[in-house]
Length: 584
Ligand SMILES: Nc1ncnc2c1ncn2[C@@H]1O[C@H](COP(=O)(O)OP(=O)(O)O)[C@@H](O)[C@H]1O
Ligand SMILES: C=C(OP(=O)(O)O)C(=O)O
Ligand SMILES: [K+]
Ligand SMILES: [Mg+2]
Image 1 (cartoon, rainbow, N blue to C red):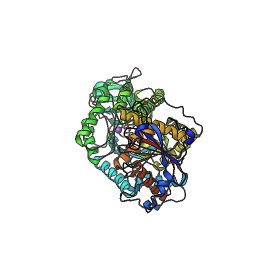
Image 2: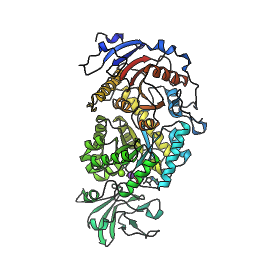
Image 3: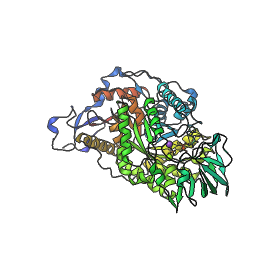
Image 4: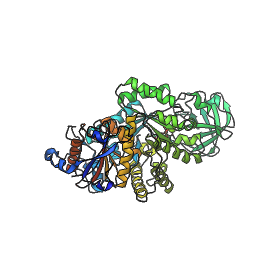
């Protein structure tokens, strides 16, 4: 290569030549060379001006002047998808216009939908607040209830241009309490005697009685065992067994919520055989999975994964049920077994969740932070998106402001560059769902900026993940493009991707600038919405990168989302190229 970097001016387009790249000059491509070679091409600015008629009519302009449009001021972004339009939601658009590329949020936000947020307008408020993924927990509610939520999210996407993905979370075979006979919670006081029973009760339940979903419960516990509700929020000691009833004395008082998880400990260790005997995916879970497939959810999160085998099984099941479905499987890491088999589970899955609620009930609490760090790191290395979940802003279920400790916890996850943060009770049944989401949003933005500006991230060793030579080329291109983007301080990376793979490879590098991911598939756009730093947009594009770029520039410029002089690096999975250019 004779070109030195000073020739590498922004007004030039540069191509990384590869065997798949029709633009490459064969004489310059050394077939023995593992990596593509950079060859110069002519300036993009002359080509861009050759296509003056490609500007579309701007479709949507909503902005209340404060960066994020208010619900009532929404003009529906319903954009009939044509060859010459780009699909983007009002929030992304407003954020880009208001704050520019650099300050867009990179960390994605998942909200669990429950009674506090299931209405169309409530969902829209969450969308405006930055929700990227809506999670429904099959542990609660009926399928009819969940169907309605899915339909409302879909309507939001269709009418307002959002790409909110739906994640269905299976109940799993955990041992949990029943519904508390309709009460929203029950308070256990110090030294009170409560009965945990496997009997079927008519409502209302007798006083101080809790039903348990697992038939073997009374048989398996022993007098002297410690019974933990929700990982220790409330504790009891087993004092007597009488047939199906287990009498327990409250040793740590607290509030118990319907269907709270139960674990029991003997000699300070979790009694694990119980979970081991139960299948990871119960018969009820399989019916829920059928429901999820039929409703076209984007992600299925499996609770209490123990091995890669169950993930593989579910993936083949999904493939057999719906040939062209691309439902991604998220493994919830929340048991001792899942930690033991972490790498193989993550390798088998399409993503993972650090489910700290149950994890903290299975391992000592003080081990949860290091487990989180490890899971986040393994996911990044294996190129799988990772969600940090549970109790991020727990106090906001009841209070409008978070504790300092909660803000520090959110900051830690953002600093670890997890792909996504999740709200559970805060958004499902809390009093301040919108405020909780706003806290995640503002803390993410602030901490991301601080880490970027202070260059606090130590670069992580990213092992090769590709299995074929083509995959390795894509990977090298993304690694190089991300590095170039940082070194040249470009404003954005553009990726044209059919399957989303190149976009995820770029996201994995956690570059300083945001990544615009253009895809023609709506389902890919939604799926990419879980991944760090990606701004997924729908655009129909061709194999001709030149025309794709011209089209993108004029569409984005017409909507004020980019401007002349912005510097961009573009990669594509069709051509396996890297191009550096200034927006004309
Ligand atoms: N679909 C729903 N219907 C009713 N309540 C729900 C629903 N989803 C979540 N919740 C409430 O929100 C709380 C927190 O949600 P989540 O963390 O997903 O469940 P869990 O605490 O059971 O793991 C639940 O304990 C439950 O009270
Ligand atoms: C996210 C979790 O799972 P669930 O809310 O379904 O118990 C968790 O345990 O942290
Ligand atoms: K669940
Ligand atoms: Mg759990």
